[in-house]
Structure formats: structure tokens, C-alpha cells
Image (tube, rainbow, N blue to C red; front, side, top):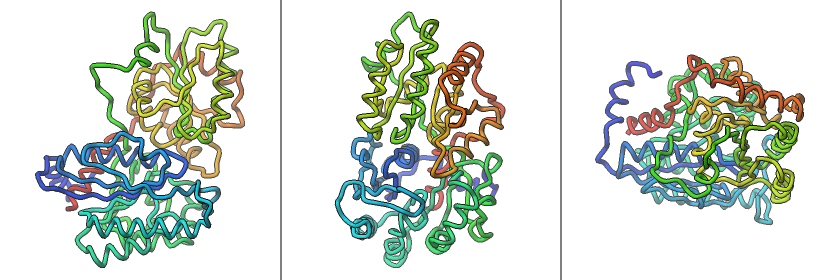
Amino acid sequence: MYSSPHRENFMRAFMTRSVAVKILIYSQDGFGLGHLRRNLNICLQIVKRSPRASILIIADSPVAPFFKLPAQCDFIKIPTIVKIDSGVWRPNRLPMNYQEVLKIRSEIIQSAALGFRPDFFLVDHMPHGALGELAVPLQALREQCPETKIVLGLRDILGAPDTIHKQWKREGAFEAAMSFYDHVCIYGCPDVFNSTEEYQFTPELVAKTQYCGYVCREDVKTTSENGFLKNFFAEPRKKFVLVTGGGGADASYFMDSFLDAVRLLAPRASFNALVSTGPFMHEDQRQLLTQKAKGLPVTVTRLGQDSIRFLRRADLVVSMAGYNTIAEIMRFRKNAIIVPRPGPSAEQTMRCRIMTERGLFDTIQLQDLNAEYLAENISHKLENGNGMNEAMLPDLNGASNAAALMLSAL
């Protein structure tokens, strides 16, 4: 995956470093978990290679403080803003103008960056931050901490190429990427989706870009399991279906269809299912799903960071097409039925099309989603599904590769 000039540096970075490294990470999530999970996966790999590393994450996810952190890692929680349309944001909880909240966020970020004086600063997803909030902090860091390496981390598919290219040009993201960043890490593979080509990176930006592969969580190996997990998989074990929608804010539509499908299958169903609503599903929607699941072989729960233990044991996963979930489905070679979120971004639809063409899983588009069709697909997958076309799996060592790239840059 890497060109030969980088290999020696990468090999050195894979060895444990005795130097105390300071890493600052900007993770903008709003109503989601994807960016934060991906950054924490990379943090784990950094700590493995540099056990004395200090990692400070600037996060705005409402649930960030409740995540289990790697050793030597801490959070600064900034006020949450949520995206309601392309380029349109609002404060999540504070009854303030978004510009006032943005000013507070930017000042906190700048104070943290200059006070922490990181060896490198990993900025996730947005070269200039939400609504340009990183422009002043990045300029200050460049001037006052010129030794800091600044790295931009991007998932491979950001959205429809024309839309993203126009948005980046309009918002000055290309200029920010060229002006402030030493390296760009793309969490993907060019043979799956050539981000630099699709989003029309300039030759100068391509020169500082590396593809790292897909970022996945590591398998959770433990000698003991919590009571819920033990009881759920008590013998005699039936086949197990996991239904997950990431943070859950917009997942109720396909979970409702899943319950309708199970009701059609219930007389002959030979499986148990767990519906993981995530922390951001509205409580009213969660209660409706819980009521609807009564009398069915289905458990509805929020399910936190233990979700990977259930995914590892699933015979079938029914899911939306978020980056992290798809990466973990590939990581564990799971049978899967994917229902991509239709908008506002084309990201999930694009990811489904590309991965389905590679023979990795089956996709049901929203316009085709109904109980009968979903029930038919579930039955077929449980009876005949044998995983995915492993020959078409991409590089899934993105967290390890990204950590190595960053440490080698020091």
C-alpha cells in the first residue's frame, strides 16, 4: 500500500518508541459516533507503538465523555453543534446564535493547541473545521509551534464528488489543506475509491497524501463476558441477527421494517435478533420499537461499546452503511444486508454501490425496503449465506497504518 521511500520510516515507527509524544486530535461529530470511534481506534494503535504518548482529543459529541479511553488519553468537550443541511449548522443545546457558539469553540481549540503544544495535530474530516472554526487556531499553531506536524485524516468517501469539490472550493478547504497540513491520511484504498482523483486534489495535495486502508476496531478478546452477553447466547444457541444503525439518530425507519419482517417470519423463525438503537435515537422512537418487538424473538437495546462482541458472533448483520460499521462487517467477514441512508449526503449510497459491486454484501435501497422483501432476504441469507467474497476485501489495517505514518513523521 505504501510507496518504497516510506518503508524504512514505517518500519521504524512500528517499533515501540520510548519518547513521550504529545498528540492533539480534533474530532467533529455532532449527532454521530463515526469520527470519534475512528479516532479512538487510531489512538489505541498509537499507544501500542508509543506507550508514553499523551493524547488529547477535542470532541463535540454529546456522548464523548462516556467512551472508554485508551491509556494516557483524555477529552476536552466543546459545545456541540449539529449539521442540519449542507453548510448549515445549529447549536445542539445552547440557546445561542451558532456564530457565538462557534467563537467559543474556536477559542477553546486555540487555547488547548497552544497550551498542549502537540508533536502532531490530527484534524479529522474538515481541513478548516466546522464553518472554518480551525482557521485561526491552525494559523496560531503554525506561527507559535512551528515544529508541530499537522495531519488531515479523511475517510475515503466524503459524498458525491461534484458536490464535495464545489463545497471545498467554496469554503476554502483546498486552500486550508495546502496551507496548514504536512500530511493527508485517507482511510481507504485507491483501488476501492480513488479519493484524490474523484475529489480533484491538486498535484501538490496528492504529493502529501497517503492511503492507509480502512480503520477497524480490533477484536475484543476477553476471558469473561458480561451477564447480558452470556444470557443472550445461552444454549441451545439459535442463529443470531444483529441490527445496528450507528448512533441511531436516523435509524428507526429500517429497524421498524426489520420488526415487520420478523413478524412475517415469526411462525418459522429459527433465530434471535438484537436491535441496537444507539445513543442518539429519540426516546419515543426507541419505546415504539421496544413495544413493537414484544412477542418476537427480538431484544431492543442501546448497546454501547460492547457492540463489537455481538457483531463478532452474528450470523447476519442488518445495518446502515456508515463507514465504521461497514469496516467492522468486513473485518469479521459477516453476512450482511445493508440499507443505506438516502441523504442528505450521497456517502452511504456510494459506499453500498462500490462494496456491493465487489461482492461483499447485499444492498436494499430505501425505495425497495418493505417487510416482505426484507423477510425474503433475511431467510435467504441465514439459509444460504456464506460470508463475503474475501478475495475482494480491501486493506483493513488502516488504524495501524495511520498510527505508523503519523509517528514516522516526527
